[in-house]
Image 1 (tube, rainbow, N blue to C red):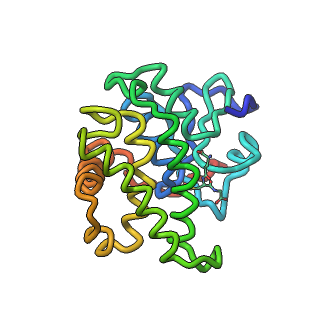
Image 2 (tube, rainbow, N blue to C red):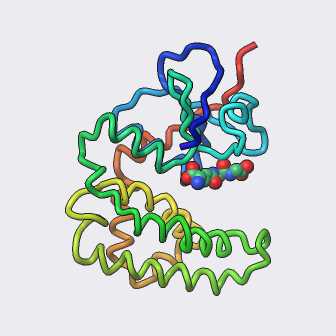
Length: 211
Ligand SMILES: N[C@@H](CCC(=O)N[C@@H](CS)C(=O)NCC(=O)O)C(=O)O
């Protein structure tokens, strides 16, 4: 949480600056939906960020949530936890496995980026794919023993990590499907098929300030 406050016109519901395909924004939207938090979702383009987003959060990453009182939350996990502390009908906060999420957001994301975008990083994608796969083996071990990362139902860790595994899988779907990761593949497919994910992925036109 940045502790910043937005000097904007009085809001009646929170505003989420979001980018549909961003995995961080995706997990924020999943938590906002499951917590039944009404908000206005403003779809932005990363190459054409609105001034309102930058004014609210100068680091200008998405997602950014601006609350009706002007408080700004500009870290996806903080948005998830904020929303779920308000209302947590599925008990997601019981599955807030900070260690697992940190491994995803740190090393797994590092290897994902260097596998997915070798030209940006000057990286060998095969090396980083292998590192990512080794990390997925740890998830496989958990998911072989229980249906979800923290137990027998979806919780915060599942929603926080899934968008990154989805990206990893999508780089080369045939290769991913051929790996010995049956539990991870089942876990991913289950989340992608869920109505919650469909709701989180609704397409919206690019938001522009009126006037
Ligand atoms: N730690 C941040 C990371 C958010 C992030 O890096 N989002 C990317 C998009 S997936 C972004 O906005 N990057 C800035 C840019 O591309 O200009 C969070 O969890 O919210």
